[in-house]
Length: 209
Image 1 (spheres, rainbow, N blue to C red):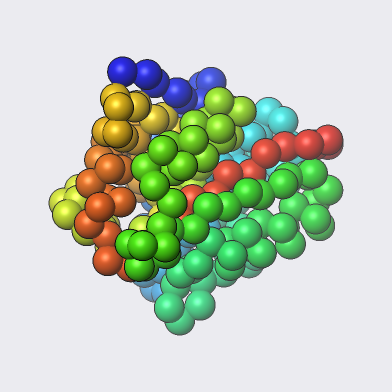
Image 2 (cartoon, rainbow, N blue to C red):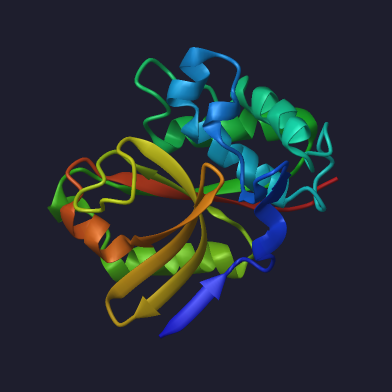
């Protein structure tokens, strides 16, 4: 079995009073009802920007929960869900592109879509190669699933942040940051059983300021 991960697994840690350390932000931290309902996409983008905080000049430190919430609100204004949520990788990338262009961060987003029709999908090797390439470049991978298929530990119509990939032949397992917790996801099962597909995005850093 081979494993690929981002360089700093503690790069998502957020100290929580009385609750130890959380892994990434929680969309329930948003102030508005609609934000809490559909905020998984901008929350995932927030996790990734926080991870890059030593390489980007963020408008807030984003170290504590309160500072992370400030970043979440900023990201929401750019990576903004529609009435159907943030339901395409293109909408996610468009939001990141607008934000990073204004901040001069030099991010370059690459995406891999998983169509709803099985016959149109990339195979497991292509998916693994895409995720591995992102993680090996120290880029967390945003994962959109519109249907969780047979994965019982993954929410429907939801974004999470992939931070590690394990490969054993055609079997793919991913570790994901989701609402303050770490998940272990059977990506092979998801690819075989999702009925709506989704996609993956990672954003590499060029000449970040």
